[in-house]
Length: 278
Image (cartoon, rainbow, N blue to C red; front, side, top):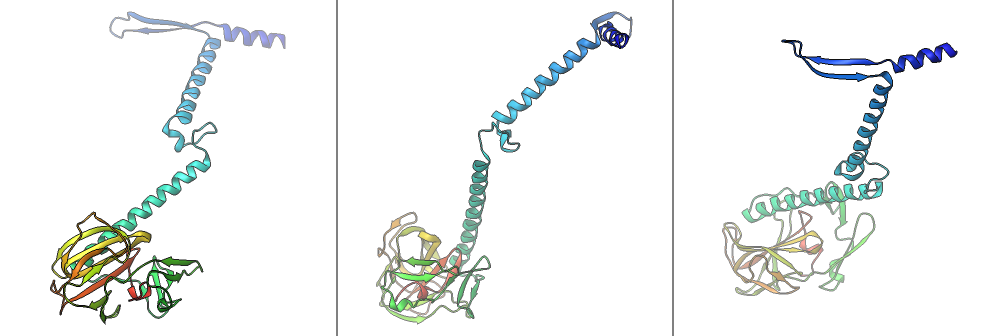
């Protein structure tokens, strides 16, 4: 056993020389003397430094979001919350893109695909029944308060008012692709905002004539077409019941002085009669 230890000790203490020479004239450029023990020490120190650098990168740089460590600034809960926020932002962006696309079609008077289950009388959004439309009759509710119940049983209360007092000449009909109600009234009658919101479009379209579009809370959008004049500019905030236009007969798709009124929820056309008492 003693001879074995002596042999190992001798082996680790043997000196070796590494020499670098030029190939042309064999001139010596570098000479390094090493022992196996020194080589082991150098390797251990190198591995320690390398591991320390990697640990610091993972613990105190953005890499910790990809490869989390125990000392990471972001806990698993915080990372989960960030992922949830990113998913929520992506969903909101998709919803905004959908609404923008639909709004462009609405203003151009083009046909829009509507998910509306008339047999079950349900509003369908993302293939899920969101509202049991007509679950509570709007005629029994005050004009400014309409209550609907979701498919999960949760009750939603929306405050709307009629945009115009007049006679309804045409109603919401998916079969005829008439995604609005038409209200006949005297020319230059005042058209009002059904709820507070921001005017996101105020201008002229070939089909709808003088048109106003308002973005409301809870992802509602209201559209007012065939007006004689628009009283509000884009970007203007309007309150509940503010005058936004005057009844007219503008645009190609009109047959007399009236208001063509549309209501949209989450990018899907809904029947205004289920939300507003006219």
